[in-house]
Length: 292
Image (cartoon, rainbow, N blue to C red):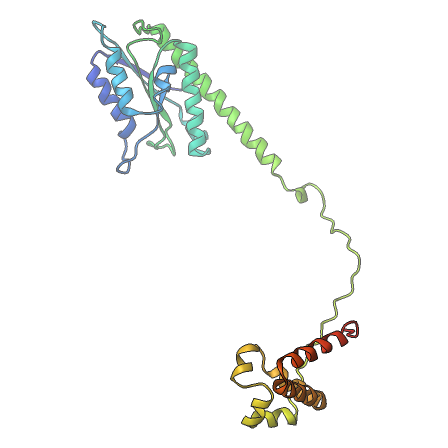
């Protein structure tokens, strides 16, 4: 059986302290943290949980009233329903309680406005004890005085239990439906491996062997004068990235390398115009003759 406690007082300063109490206290909270404050009615809902603005609004609503009445409700659930809430995520459980509070006051006490906070800490012999602290303003949404008769309070009790059970059952159906939709396919039908065409294994590529350095190349490496003639001096060492290429070329075809070296030495002693003409004719001769 659900339990709903309803009390009232006439002190605006006490109402301010009650807002602070439901947002910070009742059980230990880390320093600087507080519970979310939700509004009842469009005006208090527009404050978006601003504690100071809510406290000022509660005190302003008491102005002009000779004997303002602040109603405070504590709405709880029974042990069986608390166990069902314990299976839900904390945010999902808070959403269920928040929707239930809105529908309860809208249906059983239409026109009231105020603030409420949701507590979910555990209690004695309970894994969780979800309940709601609500504080109503002394004025209705249209500006008239707030008055709740015993009959209206009993209607809030009955509507609260009905809305909580309805919202909780709705969320449980959604969770069960989502769990069924996430059922893997292999649990419903036997697994069949996809057919793939037979492919031959790839032939491993042979590692490319480096050509050994011949005796001529070794001789040129040992002779300083020969290294200068082959272009490994300080001039060509700065220009070429791999000087070993020239040595390998000399090892593979010494005659061709000697002819090219002789041509380069002869071109150095020629006059400039003759040397330019020689290189020009050499380039024209090679046009269209190279196959690779």
